[in-house]
Amino acid sequence: MASTSQGCGGRRGSATGGGTGIGKIPCKQEERRQHRADHVRGNRHTAELALARLANAVVAIWYPIKLERDTERWSQGLASRLARPTLTAELWLHPRDSRVGLNGSGVLIVNPPYQLGDAMRAWLRELQAALAEPDQRHHSGHSVLEV
Image (cartoon, rainbow, N blue to C red; front, side, top):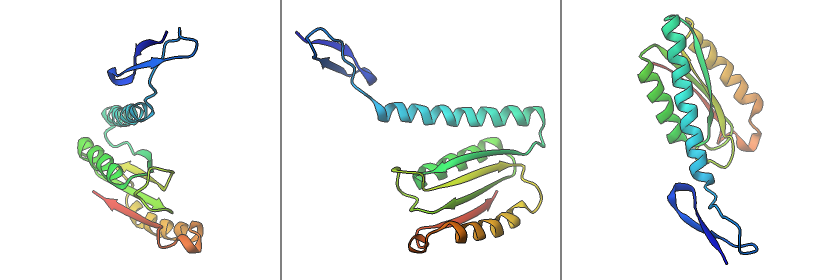
């Protein structure tokens, strides 16, 4: 006899396995979505606390580049919510439109030091040239955006 249990997202699933077990439908995608949302709230909250204590603090937040539209939405949303000067610097070695792996990394800096953007443009250009494999150079890139 199989029993049913409440699964992730309110779905019902059945479990067999001797006929007495209780089953749960795995929800990896839903768990990952919740995990990302928790990190976004945590990053924003931590930055807001630091800036409330010291308005001129330089706050740096690292983030992965997996899917370009998610990355842009996150960084633009955080920068607008904090309402301070920001700089985003990104380096990617793989196409920016895949969640399969880590395509690159970025850092959002609140209250960036004077001329940091100019220096980062030079560093990222050199870093991209050093890290990108010859057959991947057409997929790699870097950007620095100051808002």
